[in-house]
Image (cartoon, rainbow, N blue to C red):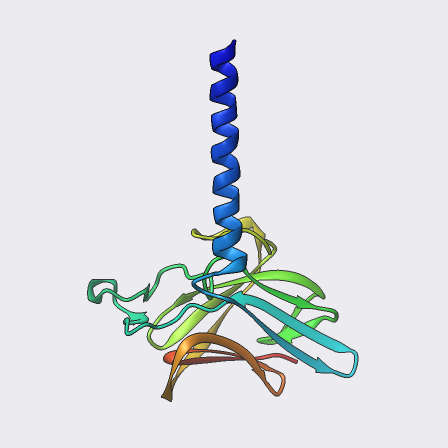
Amino acid sequence: MKALKVIIGAVIGLIIIAGLFFVYALYINPTSPKGKASYKNGDKSIHVRYYRPFKKERLIFGEAAQGALVPYGTYWRLGANLTTKLSTNQDLIIEGRTLPKGSYGLYTYPYADHWEVFVHNKTWGISYKEPAADGIVMKFKVAVQSSEETVEQFTIDFVESSLRMRWDTTKVVIPIN
């Protein structure tokens, strides 16, 4: 009985240590810090929460065989750590379709000339793999633009009413009405 208590105590201790490490790495001193982007126009309010990895002299977008951090044609959660979350207090028109007000997870499959962007009903958690297909709310393609400026840290912001994502020399702009 005493040995069982020792084992249970050790397991609980390990769980507490792992939990503290997780909190430290994700919230206190993350390698990819949290970013926020907001857009307001009258009563319309859009917010994006995401995590901002750094380039650190790496190839960001490209072929897997070249060692790209985000290989073409593979799932990417649009940042690091937790799911990238978009919240809106009003319905939005994206690519001619209505996205109802609410909160959504965003992810993509990047390619050299376009990204396939997915809007998903999963808004939380660490998303190392693509969420279940039955939660896809919307899917659309957006053209990739090249930027003369190299952006060291993944950045999401708003330009007028468009959602803009930039990293390295890649830029993607999603018009939102």
